[in-house]
Image (cartoon, rainbow, N blue to C red; front, side, top):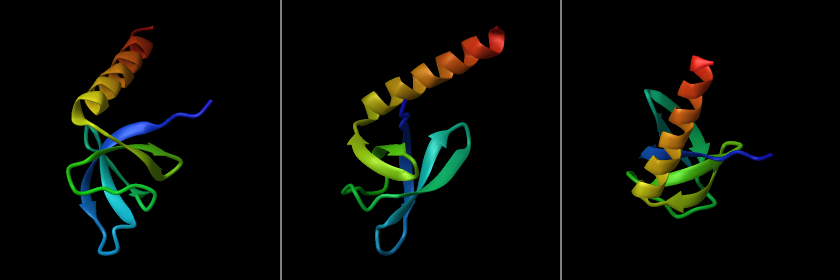
Length: 77
């Protein structure tokens, strides 16, 4: 099973090959964005260190909410 995580681009390098991605709750990581056309503020799906798709903000937030819900129900168990 493959899993892609949505995040928001907060910065881009000069060549626009790598971005700092904010996944929420203070979690930020670098990802390769050379496969998609992006700008700061865009939301992307990241899989295995590569941004593979640009998302709209609503779709990204819905997916992040689902992840948070799954994690909270797991912590309660």
